Image 1 (cartoon, rainbow, N blue to C red):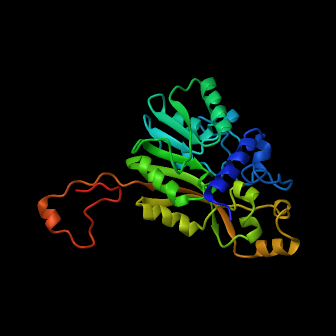
Image 2: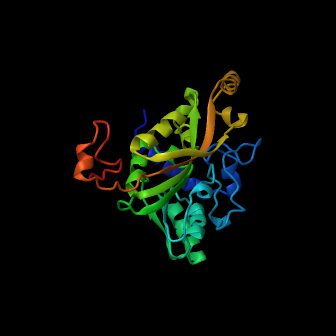
Image 3: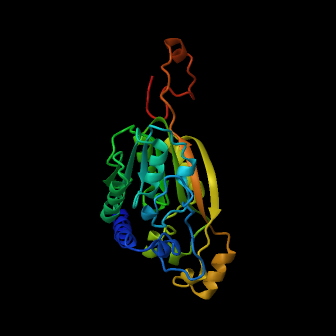
Length: 296
């Protein structure tokens, strides 16, 4: 059984190779990691081309949604993009936050960081920076970000709960996130679950939709909403690498759903201090501390 670090190493190695592939190849496979399909183009990704701030050189075709579309970014905000790749979502976010804001991209693949920095330099964006590091242990101080975005990356991290805990840590009280990701309804066949290529392909690492939302809620986030959801169909010419004909039929007929969802949630703001009278009247089920740890 592979450890968390084994899985991270697999993803890092494969995404170093993916960084050198063309967008067409990446978009016609699962997150650029699996066999290219000759039956469909655009298996997961959404079209960014009409989005303001879009930079074609930074679009590697690896996303599964448009998280910035729902991110409610304001001018002057500090935005963090988790798994920033070549910088596409960072540059879209920079269009919204403007020259007075700040955008930080985090990625653990050195070649992706290099590509993103070159793109930022070409654009002359002095307020967009890229930091190498794990998104489950971010190289960022507490309560830095107004907004966090991410596009089809959390499913690549073995410990989702740890990432969500980190998101809560680096968001300012009252901040929010908009994240596009892959989730499941029903169980994947064992052959898909255990394959490293399907893990890097944003499928095998996905967790149940219900569990995904529960991790967010349990961490203390509020106003949790799925703002967009679309089914993902894996073409048979990709499935045939892992499943025989009978298993493919069963997979397609079973109640197994693979979905791209874009989730929005907020970190509660600082709790107002209660008076001694209010404290005396607290009931047993009314906590003195807010979910972000700010006690009265």
